[in-house]
Length: 217
Image (cartoon, rainbow, N blue to C red; front, side, top):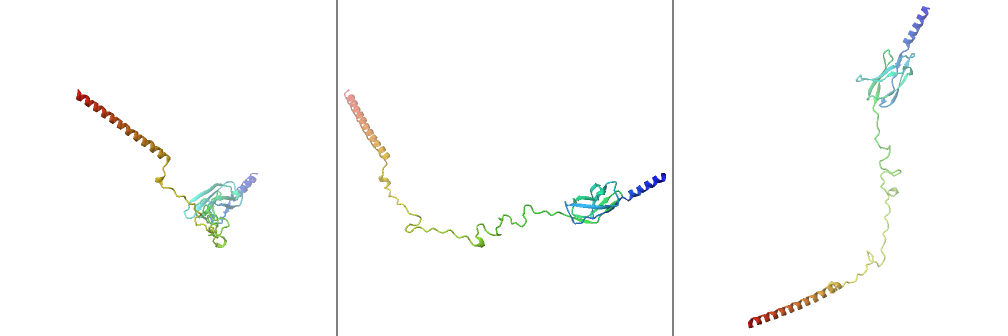
């Protein structure tokens, strides 16, 4: 009975020891930054612990961890390429040591020019021939000029002119307001002259009377 139990444990140990990673496949490159790349490997039995997946820069030997919780039994993992352009190797550790892939290249992603439509010239109208000016006639011919309207016979250029009556000289025409204003002014001047003369005569007479009274006194 003891021998049977020992044999069973021995066989289980051999089966456990044989369940290990065989090889990790090399991605077909070059890989583009930001791309989703499937990483695959082969196992020779069921795994009982997660694996550790890293990427190694071949030039600098810098190692970056992709994931330290890889399900080895899935035998595939999607990696979003997040390393700078260069040459790399993958390393997958199932607990018994790293298994390495072959080298592969990572290149930078190419960005399209913003706002540029493929094959279309900026500002070109749909269906318009390149280089055609707006309003140009088909075939490159200039549009016909509008007809010029001839003036009627006997009519001078610029249209008929209306005769303007001759105005009388300004000094011969007196406005009513000026006439009415000049008459009162003349009457006032004559009245003032008459009043001044009467006052002068009265003063002269009084002076004469005063002289006579002083003489006879």
